[in-house]
Image (cartoon, rainbow, N blue to C red; front, side, top):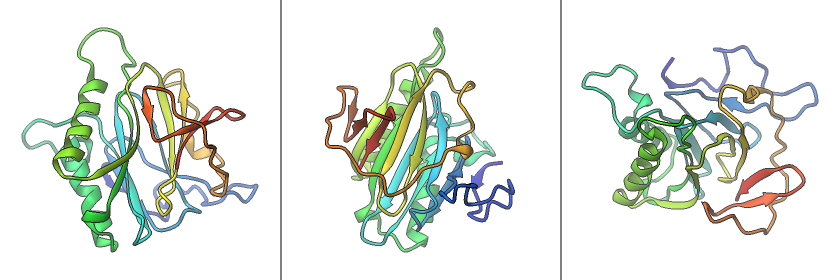
Length: 212
């Protein structure tokens, strides 16, 4: 299913809270996007060569995430949100409808790994597209983690704009991110990001990259 995902989770029937009472992330898959106004209900996804763009308006307190497969698709493609330009415009328009302002939007981008050897490096094409799009549209990019060869788990808090990311060996072997338990009040460390990332720091105890 492509397009926006209902915040009620009627599609999955998964409760908002885990048995421990911590928020259960609102999961999106390939070709989907979601927005939110509550850091107690973060948005989450798993990425291989795909890219996720997290956008938020820090003044209006609204944000969202998309998950696209390719920079562009064939003419007449039906899964519009699966492709870069459409995915970006759909997410931006959804945030604007929720009260955000395009001039205040801040981005954080993740994914674009080369998870399969040989052939076209789809991850690199996706990463180049999203960076070019943000630059062309004058949108500020506060943090990024792009490229490499490992898949990523990503959790985004749409009001504060905070993001938590972990590397996993491959996309297929990753645990279902809907089972992650993510307390939104965890402190942010001051550690500098490694060279291939920007705007983040590592929580050495958990192995999670934090992008505040």
